[in-house]
Length: 289
Ligand SMILES: Cc1ncc(COP(=O)(O)O)c(C=O)c1O
Image (cartoon, rainbow, N blue to C red; front, side, top):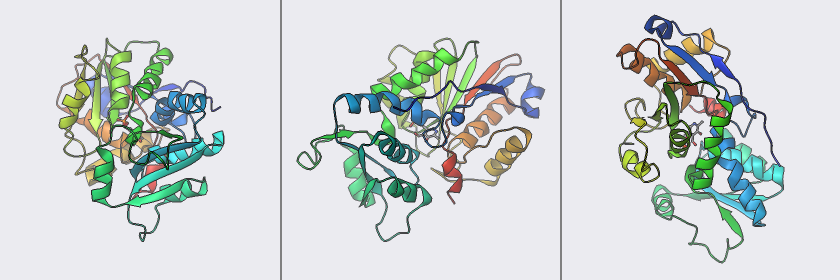
C-alpha cells in the first residue's frame, strides 16, 4: 500500500497579493510524494484500491508523452507489484521523453499511437476494444477521470480547517476541480484550464456538478496550449519561486498563478479575501521544453 501524511498549507509571499489586500495560501500537495505527488495521489488512491480488491493483473491507461498520470501510474504499479501498460500519443521512432523513460524503467509497457488512433481511443468510455488481450486489466481513463478519482480529491477538505473565499487549481480532465467544488461548497473554486479550447469542459463538468454553482473555469491562461509557455508565464514563475520555498511546473501550476495574477490585477477578488491555491505537483513537467 502507498500511504501519505496530510500536506502542509503555507503562506505565499507575493507583493501583488499584499497590495490587493488578499491573503494567498498554498496547499503543498506537491510534497505528498516525489513521484505520486499532488492530485495524482488524490486521484489514484481509490482506483488503485479498487484494482487491487478486484485482483486485476494489470493497470492500463493512456496519455501523452509528458503525462504526469502515466508517470505516477507506472510508479504505483511497480510499488504495488502490478503490471502496467499504456497507450501513448507519440511516434515510436521519436526519442522517448524523460517521462516515458521513467515509465519504461518502472516496467510500463508502452504502445505508441498516432494522433488519429489516439483520438479513436479517447471516444471509448470504458475499455472494450481489446477484450481478449486485456480482459484482466483495470482501465484508468485519460488523466484518471472517474468518480473514484473525484472521491479521492474530496478528501482534501479533511485537511483544510479554515474557510477560503476562493480555491484556485489547475484543470485538465476536470476531476480535481469536480472534487474540490463538491468538497468546498462555501468557496468559489476556479479551475484554470492548462490547454486551449477548454470551453466545452464547462458543459461536460456540469453533469458531475448538477447542484453546484460555486465554480468557474478560467480558459484565458493556457498560454497558447498544453505545455506551451510565454515570457510572461516564465517571469511570474521565477518571481514566485525566488520569493517562496516552492517550485512550480509551467504546464499546470504556474498557469494557475498567472490566472490568479490577472484576477487580482483586474480587481475580481475583493480586498480582505482569502485564497487557497492547490499545488497539484507535476514537477517532473519542468523537464518539458
Ligand atoms: C500537475 C497536474 N495538475 C493538474 C492537473 C489537472 O487535473 P485534472 O485532470 O483532474 O483536471 C493534472 C492532470 O492530471 C496534473 O498532472
